[in-house]
Image 1 (tube, rainbow, N blue to C red):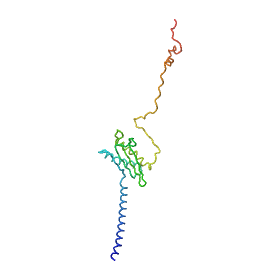
Image 2: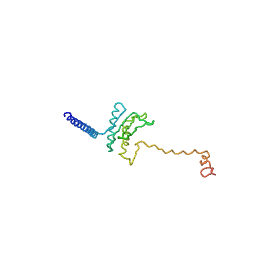
Image 3: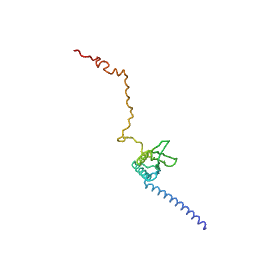
Image 4: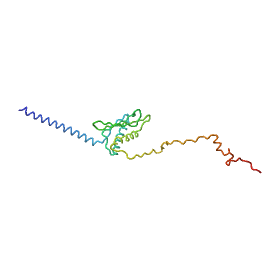
Length: 200
């Protein structure tokens, strides 16, 4: 009799433990979701530059990405990794930035954005790197942002656009016979006569 009484108690205890573990897991999941909603969105940033500039760029990129997407009033991407490295090369061509989008069969899209700290022999400033970031963010949220209906460009002040019209062709040099024909003195003046001394 004592053994029979213990078995139901053990079953009840196992059921209660299973229910409790499910409640704990669910509460943990809800807590993570709530903290993710309350915590401001920020991209994952990796900067391959040592020293103060690396730390400064990491903060500037995270701040610029948040403010730009907030100003556009779009939903930030589920996963965005921004990598700042010394050079970005694709097919042997140096680039200022490169955006790659990965999409698996299951799961959200993953965006990886590479930003170059220098192109060729020229070192890019922090403002140029952040400008390339903002330009590529437009493509990250292009599906929600929509296509632009108008684009108006204005050249930089003080810098004239190059003129691609070909220069006028120079007239050919006249031949000696043409030079002789165009001279009035060769045929006795404008009226075709030769000068003569007036009679007395």
